[in-house]
Amino acid sequence: MRVIFLGPPGSGKGTQAKRLVEKLGIVQLSTGDLLRAAVQEESALGLEARQYMNAGKLVPDALVVALIVKRLEAPDAARGFILDGFPRTVPQAEALERELAARGGPIDRVVNFRIDPARLTERLVGRRICPRGHGEWHVTFNPPRRPGRCDECGEPLVHREDDHEDKIKVRLEAYRAQTEPLIAFYTQRGTLVDVDAEGDFAAITAAIEAALSDPGARA
Ligand code: AMP
Image (tube, rainbow, N blue to C red; front, side, top):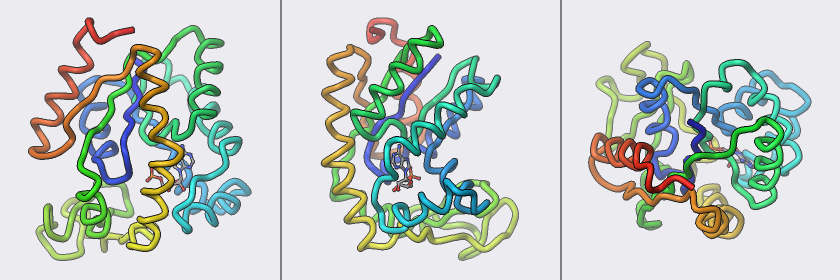
């Protein structure tokens, strides 16, 4: 199963993807995570991407496409994947189609996370991340047991550089201008399924699972 999670920053794509990959036995491919790893390693790609990411802007298509194409070649992606945060522009979606055509497996389903835009800023501003990848919390909606510490490993949680209000504004505008057109793109392909991304976490997981297992929604 090859799936794309589409939705604005803060709509819960990453958290739901982490939950579902365990259940479905496929991998989560997050360009945001791959880029943050490149930044941490201070690779040439990371150094170039950092300036865009810290400003809340999209990293240029060529860089992101090269990164994800390389990741798709890894053996663990052959069984299926959830793309989380990619594609984010129409040229990225077109590049993905070309790549998957060469590999003989198109996208099965695009899950479109629908959420009131007014909710996103409060979700992102309060988000805190475990630096060791144990997950994320929210200072108000989902606080860790010990304030500011990961429930799993006790490490101090991180407030992402781009989860501050001025950067969030830029990111949401980038979503509206560059990513939202993908809703029409994938509607045209017949692969898009809307999911209500507000409310109870488990109910959203169930709605996504239902969307993924409904053969009627398949292109
Ligand atoms: P995320 O963790 O998905 O919110 O991504 C964090 C940041 O990484 C974004 O604000 C962009 O700067 C960059 N990024 C992640 N995925 C992409 C993409 N598909 N295209 C361009 N930039 C991306």
